[in-house]
Image 1: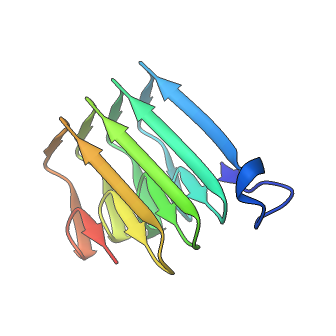
Image 2 (image 1 turned 90 degrees about the vertical axis):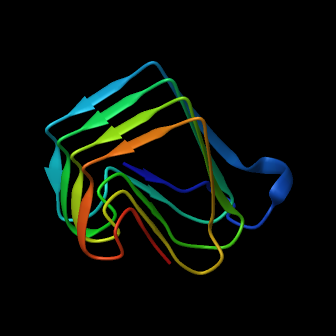
Length: 116
């Protein structure tokens, strides 16, 4: 899923998506489950991500431009795999905040859980 607002630079009209109490199990793809572009905010709360795989950057989150943000709280990331950044991949000043979450058995060829 790619998050990108119509106006990528008007900070008063940013795109926000909130996921709460969801489970993502055994997904795979060429890139991560969520790709966050400029002027977007993804909020994940009380969720489970298990056994997901990406051939590219970040199995769960690929955040790629300025004014992009991801907030994660009270979530579990278990056995997720990616080529680069086992769970998260960030570039070009993307911001990721994680609180009260658990990471178990995640893997990447480069970057472990997080790659920037």
